[in-house]
Length: 574
Ligand SMILES: Cc1cc2nc3c(=O)[nH]c(=O)nc-3n(C[C@H](O)[C@H](O)[C@H](O)COP(=O)(O)OP(=O)(O)OC[C@H]3O[C@@H](n4cnc5c(N)ncnc54)[C@H](O)[C@@H]3O)c2cc1C
Image 1 (cartoon, rainbow, N blue to C red):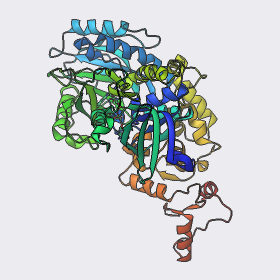
Image 2: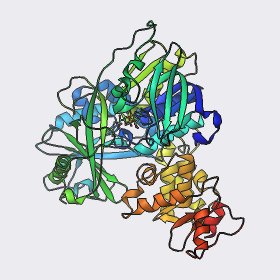
Image 3: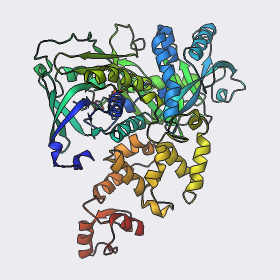
Image 4: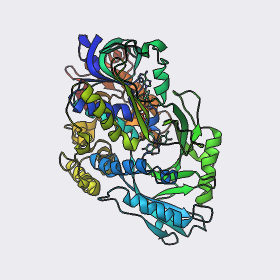
């Protein structure tokens, strides 16, 4: 962790300070570090803890934005679609959507025209195009109610949104960026040539950062951050010097809450659905984590707290009702096994409805003193492009002439068939997984498949020399072994069970109640680099060395650490 790297961390000088570890902040930090700039990224919670892990998880152009004539946005996102899929085929993959059609929906000719455009607005190399389907014969027709005889099929992409953020941050770090999680940025001061600020960690430790440029990538917090709501006095952000250039005009944010529900799976085939509600809204129902169906999203203007956003009963009822309009198997609130909500930070464009508000991004920058850039709006799908545009402004300002590079780069673990992104990674992913299952044949194939999906080629770093199940250490909760938890803590900034069960993975969905507490207890007792002993008792509980010694003295355990065992050896031995 960055905090362990040395005493001089109390003051850091850098070129770019990026505030906000959602997808946009992580993407900007990655691009900037890859151009050779000295970068600090700080996130007040976990990476991707907010909007960026609460999306519909689609790498998509946004078919429905066509009816708002957002052609430029749809084209920009469609160009990114295949490019992103190639760069990280372990966490993103093509998804075929089926749109059932009935009399209450938009007219068939309009949908056909929209799909015709959607197929052609950007070049497709490997995603198949759209066509009409007969739902009486199509596998996606079977779970639907009678009356849906016709429909359409088209392509988009799926992404593990929370892992995408972590991979972008990882890439940033591997290009030299310093990444601080659970670290809030406040007390900002703008000077002629630099910014100064204090970063405060969860443990209260403070670090002074002096940066030549500030990036405000705080998503839904962007306006509050500008107003000094994040601890900085409002005047701190006012230019204290004569303007050297005028700011680009500043929009305001429209905050829109969107929620999803997860239910036991309503269908077993691999297609996703796009449903049209009678109120004109679009809702997706997608295969999720093997055993589940993900249904969302709602769209509501939002003024509440940003730190703890939750679904309302009315949203649950809305999504269940819509699902029941299409699927034979009815669902109600009692069937919801999990839900999540996020707040979209959209650029206020005076659109009448939340659905009609533009999903495009705006980068607002000024040089009224040291440069500052604020991100307004955006989509997961366009994060790479957004970061590239941000750096095309920041780089030259800081005297950095290194050009854009991310269009031809894999994200960590995405280099399945060589260093360059390739469609092979997408099209031959299962073959690659089979090769990993062969390589780690002492491990259960389903476990290797999960590791391959999660870590891509980093599976080798995660497993290290562990080639047997016992080599992974104890199974802390079902399907989660010590080796993986240690890797996530050491390499991916995980510090809690929630980080591991709900963002680095979605194992939380598959585990019984109480699993998070067990994992948190294991993490708390986990041997760090300084505590060399850890013991697993016969009942599955864990202790660090000192507690074990006390327990032994009190006759509370029959397991003694062997003299000379280091932590890993101790775990493996037991
Ligand atoms: C319901 C829903 C569905 C969506 N579906 C899709 C989709 O399918 N496809 C798609 O492409 N896009 C989708 N989006 C849009 C996408 O999720 C967002 O555009 C994107 O995640 C925004 O990322 P961000 O980095 O700007 O914000 P965030 O992810 O919110 O990150 C901002 C971060 O800044 C941190 N922060 C704030 N203040 C401070 C401070 N003072 N110091 C340090 N850190 C701070 C916060 O903790 C937060 O983690 C969806 C959005 C929603 C809400």
